[in-house]
Each structure stands twice: as structure tokens, then as C-alpha cells.
Image (cartoon, rainbow, N blue to C red; front, side, top):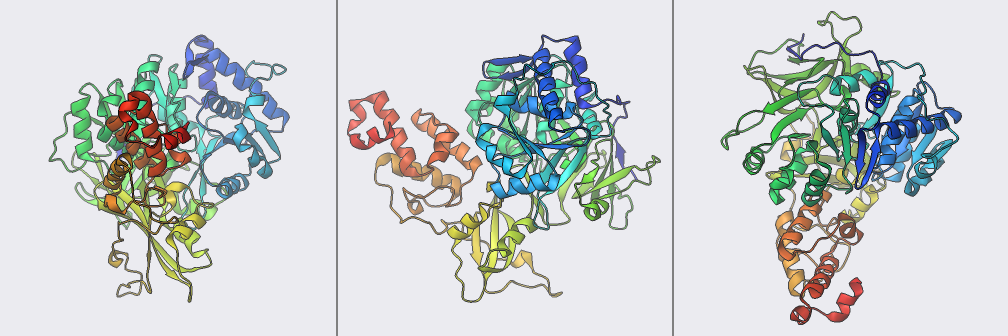
Length: 620
């Protein structure tokens, strides 16, 4: 059945932490982790993880146990992940930015009885038997720092990663040690060795973390943690330069944003891996021109096959007339099959559904046997007893060269800013609201590169749908990237001749400003008017439609656009805002006040006639 096979190599029958421990023994003083000015050697990381692992064992964590971990990117987070593996357990990384109800569901669904948390997330303890604050338990001198040497093997669970679910609830993917080892050990698609410094920029709950953390640590290299919670061009440049980063993975959407603002920020890298959604060829061209020595590697792979399944190294300059970038060939110990609806292999240039096999295939979905059986099917052509293929739902074209080209989906799954989203999950949350009778959600791209979720809803009889209140109602149950930016109220849905909803006939949304929760107040001062122009350009709406007290996320913005906004502010005013400052009060009025305060400090009385001095004092 296989249409292609990556180079087959003999993988060690060892766990992730055993391979790490081998490097710790060989090069104990080598730097394993970099975080700002902090450095942690292999020996220090190993000792701290061993002490925490023994503490976890005292709480009953052992073979096969699942331990939830909720913390932002930090040295303590990496220590926690490694410690869980050393107990023989599997970690369940939770995204601190997810709503409380969603995190508690993942805790219950995974069966985690112990949770390791940063101080801000101690409330998660209500969903577990034991809540271990990371800051308190990482230094446990009463515990031995020696390796635990418990029985572990490559076929046991390493972690559970939750993805969006079409039935309305997330589903946990049970990933094996061997899948991670196959991803980063002895590979040729990227250089991983003791000379490499790999950037860790993804949230822990995003499966790119698997490559970013274990890629360097299983090969004797260094993992450099990005200090900023949300990556920006300026922050990436600083970390790449200060830490000597050689290798990074960024989502395609983030690469596009950096290229739009400052492509030279990535110039210090040797290799840049990117993927997560369809590639913008024009951005690749601009990046190649700005960073001629940078090796670009396009990556593809669902969570169910352990991060990356295929890669394509862009060896030559890309032509602007080129329409797409292939997703490439399978990596080591990975197989692919491109099949038609009857299960037959397609011919070159034909389109079929992509099936992935090999050592990276996960065990399945946590406590979802029926769904596991649907998506993980027997690989009868491999000749290996028990071998399975993961049915991706992705449509690809098999090029005559053997490379794969992504075409689309067989269902309603989409990718936005690197996040995999089942539109059915959003629809289920919408119809659970008292005022909504029926709902359909689409991902629309009215402007190239600007994907937006649009909710089409039919209200219950007599109810009036308020778009702002609707989005606020979704905030406790859906992460920010899954909340529709636009809401269209309909009396009925258009139907196809067979009686199904005709999604193609749903009307385009009005991309102008959605209803606001505050009274409209037009920008009054020069800086406010200039910011309205900058934000209007990003949102593709007229600046005159933006009010100075509008919450910029309420009127259609997202976190990636916020990063772009901050970059434009820096270029125009030479004023630096952090993402945290921006999120504190994302309004034109607040941003303008901060800019005016900085300009007043820079220019003094020369700028005094353009600001209200009493207002500027409010900033301080």
C-alpha cells in the first residue's frame, strides 16, 4: 500500500530519557538549556529531573500514569516534562492560555491524578489528587539526584497531546517514546548534533515542542527557550543572536508575520523549519532574498504521527511564478500511501487521501476506541504484524518526482495560525448556547493570507443574537484562536439538492467592524488617528470605523495581528511595547497614551503641544 518510504534506520529500543541520560553521562558540563542569562548543564538538568521524579513517585506516579503539566515556557517546564518520563509516566502538557473548563476537561479525560503547575495555575489542583507547585518542588535536596533506572521501553506512552474534536470535545492523542525517538534520532532532514542550538518557541501543549525540546536534548545539543510568551520579530532576533540559535521551527503564519515586518530577524539561523498550513510562496521568496544563507525546510505532519511525517528542503531559489511548495517526502522510519476512495494507490499527478505509517504512528485516542479504529487502520501492505496507518483526511497530489503536494481536506478540519481546528467542535459549542438553534462555522479567506472563522447562526424563535455577547459566551469554553471573528445571523441555511447545508452558498461576512460593547468614540488626537490607520490596514476596514475605546480583539483582531501592530508601532514611533502591555488594555486610547508618554520623554517640550500632559502622567 505504501507509495513512499523514508530511509529505514535501526532505532534504539530506548526511551527518551534514557537517550538523554546517555548524553548527560558523556558530556555532563555541556549546556542543555538556555533561558535569558540562565544556563543549565546536562548534569544539572538530569539531577533536578531525577529529584522531582522521585518526589512524583512518592505521590504514586509510576508506569503508565499520566501527569498534567501546566506552565509557560521555562526551564522548570522542561525539568517537569523530563521528570515525568523518568517515572515511567506520560506527561499531558496543558496550554495555560486555554479556558479553565477546557483544562479541567483534559485533566479528567486523561485520568491525570497529579498536576505540576506554575504558581498562577494552582487552581488546577481542584481537578487532581495532588497539585505540585513547580517552584517549590524543583529543588528537593532530600531526594537523590541519581538516575532512577526503572523499567522503561520505547513502546510505552511518552505524552498525551490534545487536539480539536469534531464532536465538540477535544481528543487526546497517546504518543509513544519510539515516535519521538524516530523524529529526532539519526535523522537527515535537519542537522541535530552537539553543535546545534535549537529554539523552543512553541507553547508546551503544541506538538512542535516535541521537536524543539527533545531534538537537541537527545543529540547532545542545546535548547534555547524564547523568553517572550508570544514570538515577535524583535524578540526572535534578540534570542537568536544572544543564544547563538542555529535551528528553529516556526508556524507558517508566524513566518509570514515576521517576513512582513522584518525578515532579517531570522538571518542568524542556519536552518528554519516551518509548516502548519498552506505556504505563501511570495513570503518564501522574500525570506530567501533577505537571508540568502538560510536553509528552509517545509514540514508537514499531524499530531497522530508525532509532529513531522514529511519534509521538503527548499534547495534552490523559489520563483515568484511558482504556485505552491511541496510537503515533500517521508522522514526516516515513516511510510506514506496516497489512496483513492476505494483504497487503491493513485497514479502520479492524481489526488488521493494521505495515509501515514511507520514508527511515528501514535497508539490512538485516549478512551476513544471507536474513533481510534476509524482513523488508525491496519497496514496490510507493510508485512509487519500489527502495523497501522493513520488516515489523515488530507488530500494530496502525488507528483511525478515522488514529492507530495497538499491539496485540501476531505472534511471540515482547518488550520489557522498553526492550530488544527475541527469546525464541528465550534458548532457544538454554539448550539449549546440558549439563544442558538443551529450553527455552521466556516474558515474564509476573503483576503490572501487572512483566514477568519465565520459563524453562521439561526437564533431560537424570539431571540436576538448579539455578536459581542456570543463571543464572550464562547470564551470560557474555547481558546482564543477558535472563537469566530465574525457572526452572520440567518433565517435559514441554503440547502443543496440532496437536502444538506450548502456551505458554498453561505454569504460572505461583512468584514467591516462587528458590533461593539462600548459606545463609538472617534479618534481625537494625532497619534490616535495614526493608530486607527495602522489597525484598520491590518483588519482591512476603514480607519474611520474604529473607535478609540474599541477592544481590538472584539472588532476582529487576533494575537498574530497584535504582534504585527506592535512591530509597526516600533518602526513608526521608535517605541517598544511588550505583548503583555498590549494585552492589558488593547485599545487605541491606551496605546496612544503609551506612545505619547514615550515621545514626551524623548522629545520633551518639543512634543508637549501635541499631548495632554495630565493624560500622559496617567501612563506612569
